[in-house]
Structures are given as C-alpha cells and as structure tokens.
Length: 432
Ligand SMILES: Cc1ncc(COP(=O)(O)O)c(C=O)c1O
Image 1 (spheres, rainbow, N blue to C red):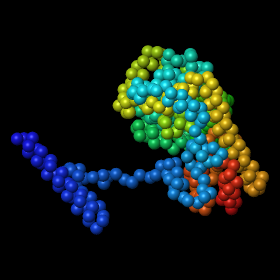
Image 2: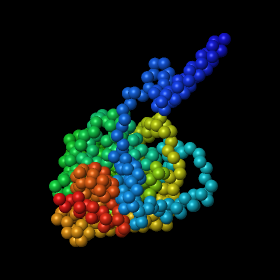
Image 3: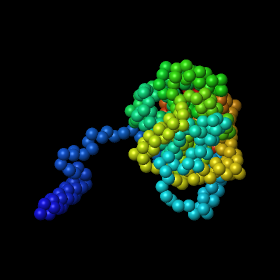
Image 4: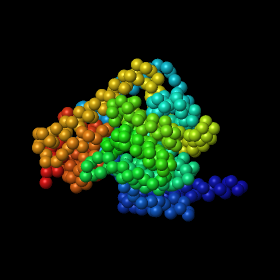
C-alpha cells in the first residue's frame, strides 16, 4: 500500500518534470528553466569561471585559421615539423607490452611497485639506496596528481598552512594548493631587470621549489645557489616540496638534473617530490607520475604510507595502469632506457638550437636594439621573454602567435619553418 502510493507519486512528478521541461524548451526557442526538485533552486549561485590561462590559449589557437599561426602556450614538445612527437622508445615499449597479453586488473592504491622503484631511483640517483627504507611513494596521476597528493597530505598533517611558491611559478600550483585549503605565499625568484635568478628566502613554512627547468622563467639556480638554498632551508627548518616535471629537459641529462633532489635527500631534509613523465617520455595523456616522501624512519614511513593509501582510496581509488607499464618497461630495460635517454637529449638539443636561432635572427638579421641573451641563458622548455601584456596581445591579434600573458613562450613550439616569422613578430612589437 505504502510503496504503491510512493510509486504513484514518483511517476506523477516525473511526468510533471517532463511537462515543465517540454514547455520550457518550446517557449520561444529559449530555455527558461525548470524546477528540478522542491527545495533546490538550481545552480544560480555558480559564477562563470575564467578559461584556463594555458588551455584557453590552445582553444583560441584551434579556432584561428591563419596558415602561419603559432601556438607557444602549452608546454608540450613538438618536432621540427610542428607535430606531436611519440618517442620511438615508447612505441617499442607499447609493442612489447602488447605481446605480453597483460590483464587490465586494478593496480594497488599506491600503484605499480616496480614503476615506483624505478621512478624514484631515477630521481634520487646515487642517494636512493641510502634512503629507500624511509621513502614512501605512490604512483600518481602525472605531476599534477603528485602535487594534489602533496597538497592534501600537507593540509591534513602539516602544522603550518602556508606554502611559499616562487613568484612567478606555474599557474596551476596556486590552484592545486589553495584548493586543499593552504595559503599561498610568494618568494621572489626572478629579477625582471637582469632577467636572471633572484631568490629571496621566505621565512618559514613549506617551500615549493622547481627541481629543474623552472616554469615559467627557464632560470634554474646554479649549484652554488642550490647550496645556499639548502643552508636557508636548514637554518629555518623549512619543509621542501620539490616539483620535478622536466627531468632531462634542463640539461638533456637525467642524472645532471637530479642535483637538487640528491642535495636535499642526502642532507635528510624533510621533503616531498612530485615527478611527471608527461614531458620526458611524451606521455602527456597517459598521466604517469610519482609522488614520494622522505620520512625519518621505516616506522614513520609505514604510518605515512597507511595514510597515503587512505587518501588515494578516497580520491580515485587507484591509479591508471597503462602509462606506468610503459614507463616501467623503458626504465627497466637497459637498451631501451639508453635509447630513451638519447631521445630526450635530442628533444633538449632541438630546444637549445631553436633558442639560438631565435636570438641570432633577432640580434644579427633584424638588428634588434634589445638584448636577447636571456633566450639562450634560460633553460628547459620555456623562455620568459620579457614581453609585456600589450605586446603579447598584439602578437596574437596581428601575428596569430599565441602565448601566455606573462610573456612566456614554449620553445618546443618553435621550428625551422616558423622561427623567422616569430622573430619578425617579436621584433615588430618591441621596436617602438
Ligand atoms: C612546473 C610544473 N609542474 C607540474 C606540471 C604537471 O604536469 P602533468 O600533470 O602534465 O604531469 C607541469 C606541467 O606543465 C609543470 O610545468
């Protein structure tokens, strides 16, 4: 009896809702809204959000049908014909994995153990063996996922809620950490006058540092400056969060790019590390990354790991399997790994040659009155050009060249066919 009434009522309201929807959609062709359920008044309180500063650029670029358009916004590697590059080592790994006829079962919450071992060994280099029993790791949804795990863990367990990021930094850092309830504070990093490094150490709390190939400035600390940073970190008892999204892209050499990781780990600085294989393996869409935390003892590591698993389980249960298998396959196979190292060297080398070409055309061919030395001084995928927001706007409006408002260009988007056009555009907007 009771269930019969309930069923009748539910059916009636479904019919009413359908009628309201039909009425609404027919009302002069305009949707005027319907009352979905009593007590809920729709999403009127949801404001329209701004487009993402980087992915928004890609959307604008796609809509532009000018043949010479250039996208220098997104940090994704392109080959010299402007095409996305699938690394041959990745292709080989995929073919070999297919032959193994592997299942598609769930991974554990912390991901593929073999992958985690190989990824962290690569990041901590020679220090790895001495810290492995105190190191906790979790395969993450690329670099951003590792940052997300860091932000959630810090927000729950770290005594201070302030995180210091470099000014400027990768825009998404602020989103990730403020979403987890942390307060974003900034430390000075880049000097716009010298277009070089300008670290002013913050006073306390968590400090986020880019392990190599700083985004967006392309200005990394020298080894001496890293030693200075270590001194400050020690004196002030900071917690270090190292973001390593570009291992191999700074120097073209994986080992050389681990200077900061090894320095902090060998000095037993409490730290988290966030690795990404998006850039160095070209696995952008596969979302392969690794979060790791250096703890004080194996006992602390066990407690930490138990909470990390709980965090992962409640967030996405367990990470995706395919990309981690590819990365693990390459990292474990001696020949493929050295092939991969050469491919990364090749990508880093092409980027360096594009920096050189852009600078040479600006200074020698176009006789720009400005110095463009910083284009070749800076390293990694990006160059912080020093162009102001109006010049950036003119580049997109008049030249169909797309970059972030802060004047950052992804050098990976430059190639032998468009470098002259880009130089002419930059020269034009900086000549008045
Ligand atoms: C500094 C920095 N950290 C982290 C990431 C995360 O990238 P992904 O989530 O694609 O690995 C990026 C990507 O551009 C980055 O530039």
